[in-house]
Length: 384
Image (cartoon, rainbow, N blue to C red; front, side):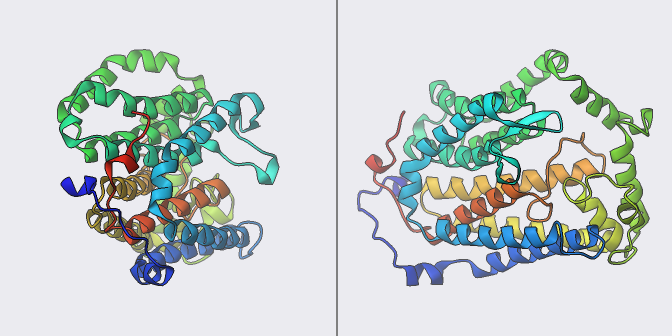
């Protein structure tokens, strides 16, 4: 850990050196996943690039430009800008209830129609950067202290409460998963996690009472989807039928009846994995999940090679974000967790979620490019 507080200023890397240090196999891997998404969206539209597949490809190409910009930037910029970026994301989330755009009974977007975006997506990246900066500054011997735990809990808790107010239970859960995961990786004692779990169990009756009616209905439907097969249970029942009907090898490209005959709702966003599994079967679903698993292995490898705590936690945090998205989406469409509206990264159709995930992966590559960089104590000195 002494290397985290090295006194010598690191030298800046030239662009040619950064190009050599970039993890190109990882970049090819995420491109392959995005192409799977484009093919799935082409199938969903009945063999047409419009309206989803073409936009998906354009957004991915734009996202790649952002990825390279982030990957080749100076990591010190993000260390110094982590708190300001968090503050901007938090301010945007605060503005959502007042000037946000309402859709589907929830107010989660800022902007206008096609130009709208979700500040909560931006917050996922900002939260990782802010927590990574905090633990870069915090001496290892102070991590166990209760007063050292309060600032990161506030960093996690405030956006979680704002997300619940939108209401967006899925995003609030993601903030908690990513934040608590980073606390664990930073070295926070198991005692605090045990106390937190006990607190959650005690608070469950109050949490249930505070949930909106439709959120309670989602949980009840998760427990027994057939209690309302034509209403709240329709989504998950149709999803299970589609996945089961795919069998081992699937029905074939563009041959999925549940998707092509419009029995499957939200087939281009939240339930795209269901459509893909129906057409490609168990084999195709396993291959797609294997691609995600390989991406997580790459991220873990890159995080472990970083010398600074900031770079380690940034890479690991973005990996946690990817894992949480994939796990929750797949568990959701297979009936293992309640439906919470989480897209499948790089595959589901969506603007803000797509660009945010690609930028997050750009930070992983930035950490890898700058894996030998260390910081002086004054470079990481922040608000606390």
